[in-house]
Image: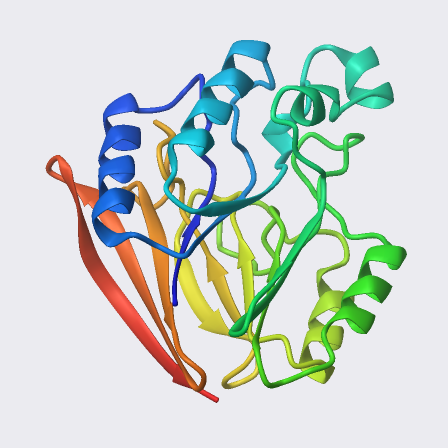
Length: 248
């Protein structure tokens, strides 16, 4: 099974050429699933959500999305506090949280956006309880996805509010991959020697990136093995930059 993990598209402040190159990549590689960990838009405007919706519509497989902090209004304070996800819900026609399951994977996507904060996210106690109850079987690859980072990267945003509690749960549950975004900085690292693995995606198409390249991950999965490949956009095309291999 092939899964693509993309994040931080920022429609409205994006590179359209990169978007088209990614679409071409999906048509050639024919993935089984695409995971999008938030920030579909740059400023949560109607035309930006419409562009994001068309992008997802053009993708060749099932796509799972959750919102990011840029998907709620920044300057329209009434909207931000009282109906922050109205355009995400009504234009994108997407729920704020999702789940997906097949013979190989079990995926849950949670909304880590805190509309009261411009950048810093959080997972509530109810969400943490949901994670604790949801992942109980080791026979599939269990994947948790949300927008905000749980790792501290020097000079970038602090981890989400509940990161320590989440890490403790993750150590006790068969969570294999945690997919996040937010920092526009790509990295892969295991929390506790092996699992869970943090797959922190860089920005697919935003003009602002903190690690020099627009990028995304691909996951190649079978019953026992996982290969994560980092693809970066360089000199007009996506190329393989690094990979990591893990086994159960």
